[in-house]
Length: 329
Ligand SMILES: [Cu+2]
Image (cartoon, rainbow, N blue to C red; front, side):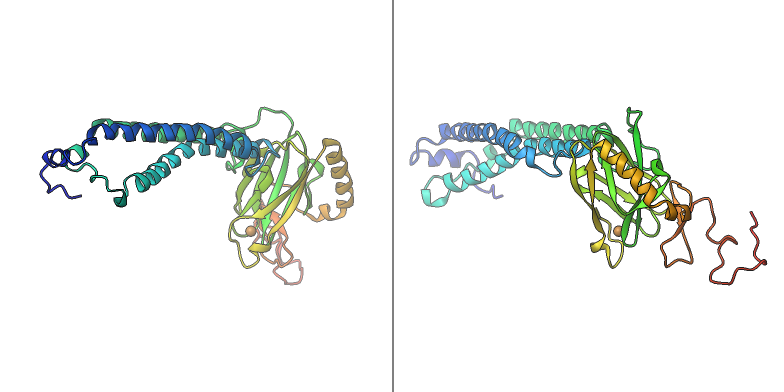
């Protein structure tokens, strides 16, 4: 900025040719503020009540509804800030463009160090940022852990006594699901009951994957050797999409399937039927554990519970079984 012009006197020197300069200053401020307040008061509720209910990920589960609410609150706060910038920009372009022949805007000392503007600016932005930090932190922890993986010992745990555990096992390149409630069966179908709080125990057999049940508002990293817990309560029946959202190898992009929220009756019927249908393969699985160790032999995608060393004598690495190798533990 150039302030080499003589201060103060330059503005007064221009006055005789354009007499109305000083009162015009406040006029612009009030006009800007009124446009801003009116537009914010119209557009904020319009967004919240018309667009808000359709914002992803929807309201299929408690955590999805929470994510939608959080987004809408943040947007309602952000919209007036965006409007403030846009309105000022458009107003400046229209009102103060050179072709309108107005005198130059104020320069020199009167354009600097306006205590009110500075204090207001710092105060407003500080209040907004601190509120967002507080709101974000609270929402992250309190409403059912917000659907994110909380690690093996979650900060937020459900108050409900009927929590259904479902294990999500990421592996190159699919998700499988183990249901300890149904004999530890493992299936590639994710079926969950409506109205029941679910604890997803997310883990991996190989590299880092990430379990994202989009419409349920659940997203948790799948790390080998880690039990990452995420809670949600499905509220609406229907289909939801599951994707891997951590680049995990060449077929990462094909690592998706869909899940189903059904009524509790349908769920238990499905569970019992599937448990029966899978009984023979379930017997070949390692017992249900929160984490596993992949089979070092394995092109077949099999795995061990994590209390068995994959390099123990139980593994024969393709060598014929003989009496030489004996369990040492
Ligand atoms: Cu993956």
